[in-house]
Length: 158
Image 1 (cartoon, one colour):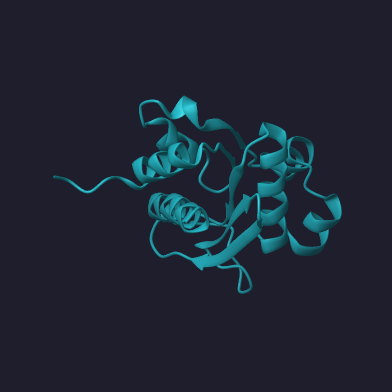
Image 2: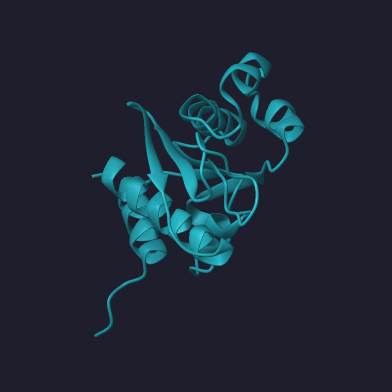
């Protein structure tokens, strides 16, 4: 018997809880939503998602504070938190996952290197955010980001 994919485990957990999930994705461009919806029956628990790649979309679609973007930048723990909270509100979901980062190969700096990603999960009991620095090319960073977001969601729902 093969090991269940992360997205299958997420679906099983959310079904068991009778809970819903929403996503707010920047650096992985919808990959998390894609993976969640690759599971048959995911409409039972997937409320929806936003690919908020630009700062403007973060402001308009997720109610991220302009002051947060100006003070901390789009790639920050504060913005990841606000994105997750905004998605949870927008979709009336029990949980929401957010990711914001620099997939590369361009866009990095000394303070914010290529591969830097903040992953957030908003839940009924609060919010958790983790800072990650992934290695590899753009596709590898995106894949690792999606894996981390799904794994963090599983941890939060335990």
